[in-house]
View 1 (cartoon, rainbow, N blue to C red):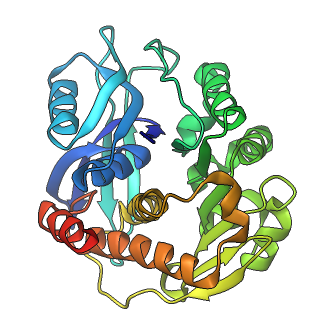
View 2 (view 1 turned 120 degrees about the horizontal axis):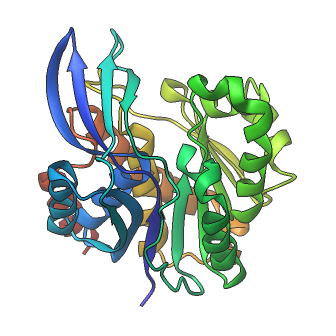
Length: 309
């Protein structure tokens, strides 16, 4: 059976609004995605690492309870799980402060045997950390060579702009290993100085020809060799935008999985097919923005599964 894998960092989010803590939960961009996919019953595994501490125990139990396979997670003993303090501004966008005493590089768990037509999601700063770079590349490039569908979300924050000269080649290398790049307007502005979707596509098409570009309230753009179009998003007042992009990814992958779309089909999908994929992605992202949750709710997941039968 076709399987889904996500590789990324694990943190424990503590969310603050107006100086007061509002929620505490497992986090990390790819983790947020795999939890939502697990909640709708997809065969998803998470590749990551976190501490053998009380916080790590909470996270591992949470992942298992939400249908995520944890066989490929490394639990290290010499330091604690990373904490991420998220401070929401007046628009409910987050500014982060991280507390960690662990340096990546202990990604020692056995990697899965990713096979043809499986789906692999990767991204964020974890995908360009020098300490795990070689193991990460072997996994992702090996998956692509075997015919898996690789989706890359750079999720590149302004806080890393000072390192951009050294990091951009790694980001480009990740794009070259991907079948599909999904990024925000801020990602492409930070990485390439691209001010719009056309500028972004001009930059990335040399490395990956399939792009999904999200631009907040402006909408979602898709550019491939076979299709170019824009889709509107829902107008809402968000409670928190922390997991919006992560759950857009989860919804997009869910639809790709349900439609049994293969890597070589991405470039030739029709407008109707993309409309259905993006609609599911927007539904997932919208649901998450209406609470302090990093993932779709159990109720939403049950309704989605019922409607998909």
